[in-house]
Amino acid sequence: MVEKEPIWKRGILDLAAIFFLIGGIIILMTVLMMIPINNIYPFELRTELSFSQIIVLIIIIICAIESFECFNFTSKRMLEKAGVRGIVIGAILLTLGSLLDLKTQALEGSSILILIGGIISYIYRK
Image (spheres, rainbow, N blue to C red):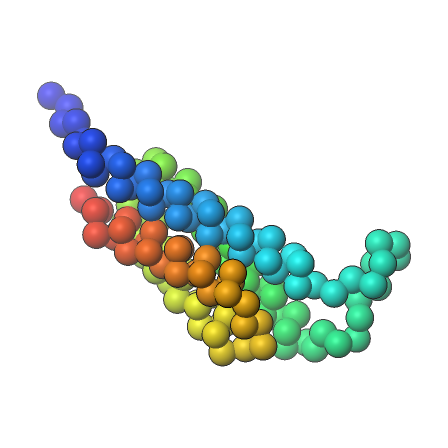
């Protein structure tokens, strides 16, 4: 006999999945808007962007893509994978957002959403 998931648990896990999705979208849009592009063609970057900032932006984009994977894991109820990855991604993003010159509230708020989604998924793992 298949054991049904209680409705309150399903609601909390759906909330965690929403946190992953919203956090990933906001972080991705924030980072894409941080890239200084002078004009559309021929895509010349301003020289204000240092090599270390480019590396940090790439790491943040990778973490945003991983948050979408955490959303996928949560929707498939693979909560242990989603929880651990969400906690790690949220911690990395929170550290990068607060220590560097990228002090935007959207980046820090989204990393907190991903961190909360990871904690919820890890708590309700089987």
